Amino acid sequence: MTTGGRPRRPALCARAEGARVSSARGCRGTMAAPRENVSLLFKLYCLAVMTLVAATYTIALRYTRTSDKELYFSTTAVCITEVIKLLLSVGILAKETGNLGRFKASLRENVLGSPKELMKLSVPSLVYAVQNNMAFLALSNLDAAVYQVTYQLKIPCTALCTVLMLNRTLSKLQWISVFMLCGGVILVQWKPAQATKVVVEQNPLLGFGAIAVAVLCSGFAGVYFEKVLKSSDTSLWVRNIQMYLSGIVVTLVGVYLSDGAEIKEKGFFYGYTHYVWLVIFLASVGGLYTSIVVKYTDNIMKGFSAAAAIVLSTVASVMLFGLQITLTFAVGTLLVCVSIYLYGLPRQDTTSIQQGETASKERVSGV
Image (cartoon, rainbow, N blue to C red; front, side, top):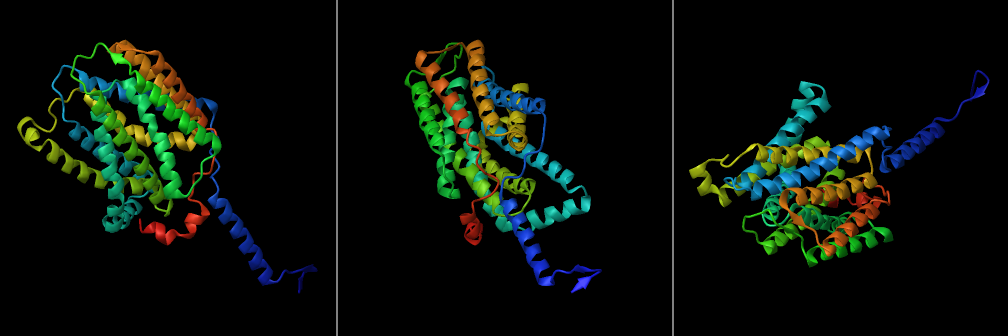
């Protein structure tokens, strides 16, 4: 048939073309979303802030655990951090919805009306609670620089969990960087640097054990949360709210199981100073700010940030805690920094679970 002298395509062809367009869009949807075009200055700003937050958090936490003042309860600090994260996530979700009615509907549907999802997110909540408490225990017994370097073992742990849980593969360069990082950490532990200005009693073996637990928790919880997040279209901030609600319950239980008797006697905020509140603030905004960095930058810049945080922590430890750097510590630290950079070089698609896993979405949703 013709209209105005021009041939009209059959409706079936039009629908077929529409299906091809839709399919193409669907294929593009599984690819990495184009990164927003931002200036180099803004990327450097993100890098600087993330580095300062990571380094300052480690140094401040180390200081609060080794000062001669009354020692606060670390379990209460972890609990308060979860509360602040929840409030920040609620505020961001409210801004994202842009309407009070939609905001209430989202909370009603995804939080109050989804007990199964809350239970699902209680798993990483519990694991993260253990990880955060282990960080306090580790920095009570290890110098900030030693902790910062050793904690990078979370990279190979996360890589292993990614391969096992998300069916992804690592490049040869990434595997090389993982082994290089492990070698660097071994050198750091071979002759650990000593902090001469710290007078409190420390147990390095306990500190290393705490880091090992924290590393395992970080790898598993991060990949588990990514799997849950990318197996549905639920907003990141809704998922955060679900997780932090569970986290508050978990950490409150931990508070009263671990320090309940002493808290009743001394109070929930016993030993809190301005530095303790600084630690809580940095812990609260650090994780949320990381998502901004990932959105606007890339793995290479994130790697630079981690390496720079190690350097800053080392310098600060020398100045504040009298850290004595050994040759093996210096070489090991250099290897760790280089391996972090190399691990971030391959820019693989991490915006969605691979097609094989997407095809088994029903099995994934049962996690």
